[in-house]
Length: 379
Image (cartoon, rainbow, N blue to C red):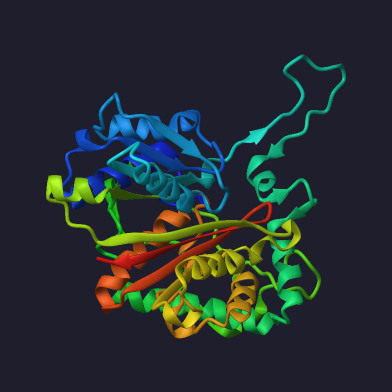
């Protein structure tokens, strides 16, 4: 938050990632039939036009439709699912699917003044970022739902802190090994003093500087003696991601090189007060649909909204941590809400090719009490 990308709107970020995806796929943008983008908070004045403007500014045909959708933290995943559905029924042959979020731009708002105000009136500013992170139905911020879920599954603060350090260190090792270079597009930032700067490495991670001693010192923020601290929760951040989906016919017709195949997907609803549990039934639904068991999948990524939330899902599913979030997650890199699903599924695709695995599942919990998951297979 308030980092190098703070002045780029979600649309600006989406254009960067889309142009990079098209270039990497060696795909003529005029061949794209549909543009689908996920976004949670319309923080910039052009964000209501997000998907449409991303398409136009990326050179995609004016005749290609576009839609911006919102499944909260699962929005990036949902863009892929929506694209896959469109291709499956023949509405599209090639689709752009992505997600974008600039949380730094979240404005302050003054409510109930459009029809005028009475005198005197002490107008109150509402932080729309904080509002977006609060479920008004159950009157709970997302962090308290993680506290409740963690307690339900017997997760301790020490376990949360240890997992947070693991996420940071795993990211550091992967970054040093250059594992993210194929999936991160440099962003050119214009600085008044330094001129143009190429932003190429995520700046939220603490990496090897994160220690269990420092984690333990951070206070519990939302509940006395609670589980959630600033160090073991996902970071508020800005970013975008784009993937290209195509039918088998389009792949053959245009000589495209597919990296992965969408095998199955699932969305579910759960108790909003433990919304972080969503990945568990979503992943189980995919396993049921495909006739697989948990141990049959080579790799998993569950969005680390909170360490407590991730650990509860890991425990309930019986996941092997050696094949889950192996290069760190949102505790390290941050969680630009509408974009995280795009990042996770892109990362899993590259990781399968790097380590020779065949199958992977990516998943996330969603505010309001939902879960979403996608299973892919390496091509």
